[in-house]
Image (tube, rainbow, N blue to C red; front, top):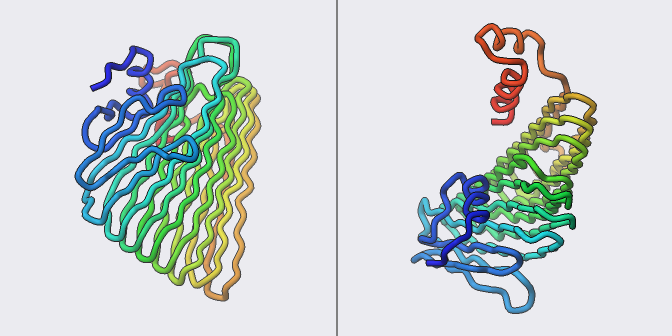
Length: 308
């Protein structure tokens, strides 16, 4: 078992909800290097030979297992690029817990670009959880630019639960999903920005297979002078159903743009989009303040419940 330093341990507690341990299937990447990894009976992790990253093989007998693949960047001035490919066999049932935390106490930008690709077989159930987080008292930027490509096989279910907690100065998120017959997709994206932070999220879901369905929910809070832009897109190429919902709370001098897009290329494609941006309701604040909370505490309670 590899001994982890205090910074890494504290970041892991945040991005993996205290769930990471060096047991079962796992891979921990720190500052561009895989410092420890393990396999389980049904999940095997192999280092790529042609570029940085790993291949994760999940066999069809995997039932209710979790695999952890967190990343920690703790060196100022570093750019970490990694390619992770997941091969999920027919019938597998697995939860993949990822996430990246950047600790930057220096004056140079630290950046992580993670390109994740999921090849999902038939009749599988996959849940992918990803948290992004930044910390450190340095002046250098904390930048995260994830790219996620998901290919969902026939009769499979894919759940994407992604959250940017705090401390990320700049992010551009690119997500592409291709869906086969009778497949289902559930996306929940949660994001908070403050100060002068910027965030852009682009999601495109292509419903190619007959009777495929997708639900995309985006919830965000913008504080300070931060700027957010969301562009979720659903394309119905067959008989399908999709629903996009974007809700945002705007505070201070923030700027939030929501651009949901739907496109039907089949007579039986049924696609809906909704978008709403608004401030915190004064009545909600007043009610919480009558319970003894300060205005700041009341705002935090409302934001926490909204994002969760």
